[in-house]
Image (tube, rainbow, N blue to C red; front, top):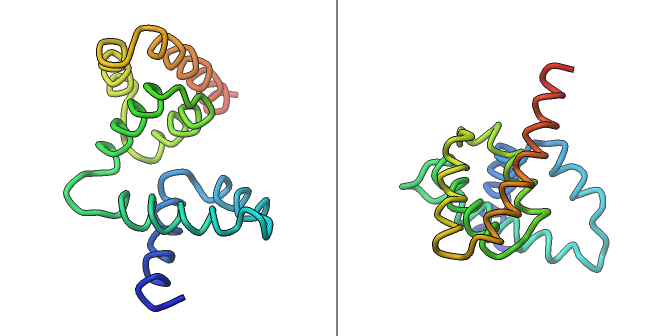
Length: 132
């Protein structure tokens, strides 16, 4: 790995931890095998070390856009993960609602309906953990 790649990877790990939380990143790293370790490295460098680390947009803004895209594409597990991540990015429940309203208009009501359902389930879990 050259120095640029090493720096991008280190940045990616930092950003990924700040958004998804260290427990999530630790689980992903611990579960990696020789088979999927290159994929984990790719997403850490490209998604987290390059795109999420770019200047210009806040983590809140990136979080909102990410949720809308994941919902539009029907990536349910990723929607849930990124709804949980809003605790770290500053995106509010109102922000998520607005993003999913856009999904309804531009990507379809069924996609938004599913995303709202997932978000409500995740919010209930988060609220229970906060008050439980």
